[in-house]
Image 1: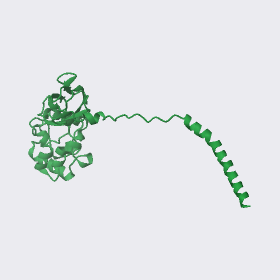
Image 2: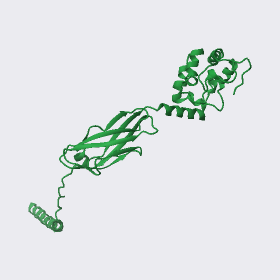
Image 3: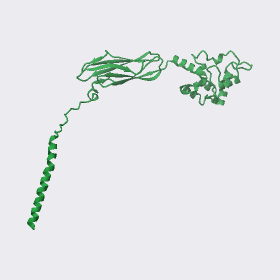
Image 4: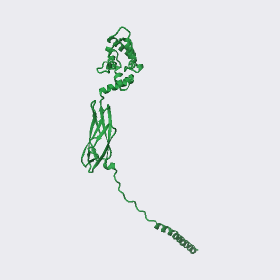
Length: 280
């Protein structure tokens, strides 16, 4: 019995082995038919331009500041640059931020040999400008781009300021109590009355040495005045002129009591006529 079982087991093993070889042969053949995959070629990574060129040019500064005198026509700057590398650097052109700014290269294009340098000139036209302004110039070259900035502090020409203020007052006489003008025409009036208030609110225009021709000398008027004349004029201003209304309800800085104190001061110090004055 045991011998028969052994024969059967051996017979099954032989059959299974034959089947395995039968099915394996096509797989091995197909695998041999596939060519081996080639490895990708090695390509070294090149540094980016910013990594190789960012330090080729060294500037004495990238921002410069200049305070000019009133009426000065231009602001002139000079930027020094040095090629600290062992390669040639070419500056192709300069691009100013606006038409009032010009920039000049020693040559165009400017070839800067290794370990040499020079200067770039920048000029800002100041015509019609005041306050603090910023202008930029972009440097285009074989090096990484660079932006140069100039800052100019420009005091306003007194004559220009006077003309500008007069034009503004003609367009809107109450404008003297707003924005920057308020520093001269509103703030100094706080807490003052009578003569002191007159000097702060009225005298700065009417008693000024170089007052506008349309601003009268209150001590040399050619018509009659009295307390009521001054009070009405100070309160409401004068239509068709640059004289604003100083009363709070008209957008001015003065209370009724302050206006009364100035009217009283003027009626006591300015020559009067017994006849009732009429506004002109």
